[in-house]
Image (tube, rainbow, N blue to C red; front, side, top):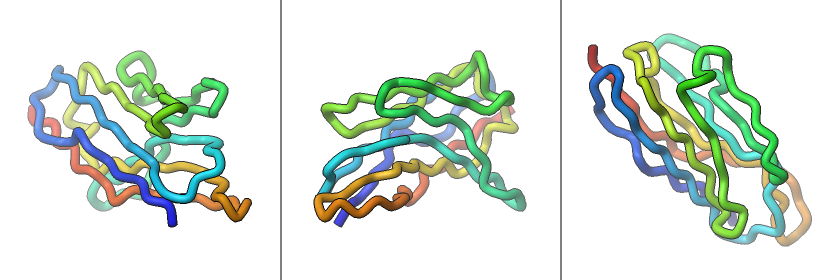
Length: 120
């Protein structure tokens, strides 16, 4: 059994900052890609940023220069530092991880989502 637990969402004014965290726990052998997706009301879930176990990152054009993804492999945790937030960043943010468990079975896992609301 593997779980992803997110924290750090909330309400912030435009121009402000938030830091999201997501910790993976359970029967984990190794974690490949970790990342963040978001879904705004009435829209499809979209990629925000991903990071490999080696530290290579990828992020959406809409957040480049404002959001930074990082991870602590020892803690099985991924972070998303969000600066210069805009009202259009308002969404539910979901943590993602591609995990190989101790039965050597690889699958995608998702967190429960954390709300980020940016007021203008």
